[in-house]
Image 1 (cartoon, rainbow, N blue to C red):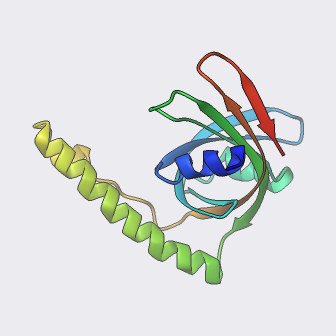
Image 2: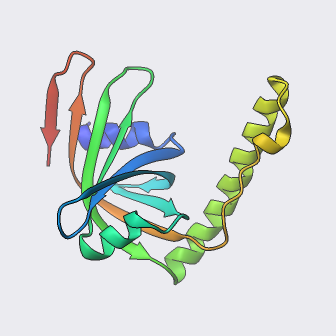
Amino acid sequence: MSLIEKALKILKVSEFITVATSNGRGRPNAAPKLLLKIDGRTAYIVDYSIGRTYENLKINPEISLSFIDAHSLFAYRLNGSVEIIEKGRIYKECLKELRKKEIDLSVERIVQGVQEGKAHQDFELGIPEQFLLYKVAITEGCEITPRGVISRES
């Protein structure tokens, strides 16, 4: 299994990911986003805040995704290019998946809150009606071990 395939397999069970972009002057921006799904070497990421990440990607469609596998403590960075999807067939298909994920995450958070004795309103997840979808074609990856050994693949 390639490094990118290994990273994507780990990422498939994640809900959130940190994305990094830069504007036309190279100014960086990192933001947490909702990971909708992984399909082959493509990641679908939901952006419902529609701010700097979106503005940067309109100028520079390159993106970097980063995350840590909590079990192994290996860190990963996946780079790729983005297609911004605001409407159409893929958008509608992903909207159905997003609504299902919203329900699943809400139920999970409410159950966890009840088990911890917390009020349920703190655990409900609401995703705004307006959102963007980033279709990320992964082109390169990097793995960093807990000892700092770096491996790269493109």
